[in-house]
Length: 104
Image (cartoon, rainbow, N blue to C red; front, side, top):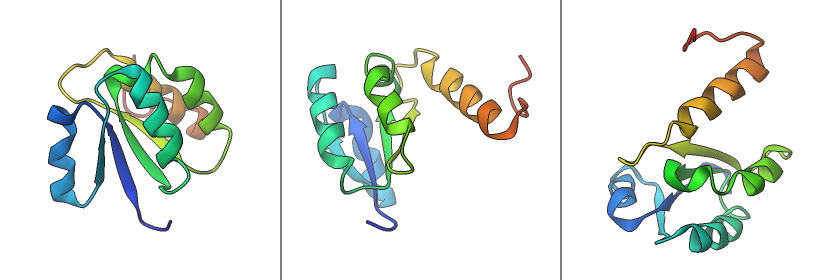
């Protein structure tokens, strides 16, 4: 499991990650993204999730957040909703106690 990373999202937006050595798992919609995320969570310590699926799957992400692994990170893939930035801001504030990047 060490050092392995995966990305879940629409095929047309995640295949570029393969060039960086990240395993790509296409999911055409939220329902399949939920199933794929549950499956890959057992084998990958870091999972990037397309931002457009992150907000609808926040109930599942909250469960993952309670454990050390996997770390599931929403990433922008061209269909930004603002959820990824808000998630990062909240996570940083929780970890550091202060907003060091966004200052909003």
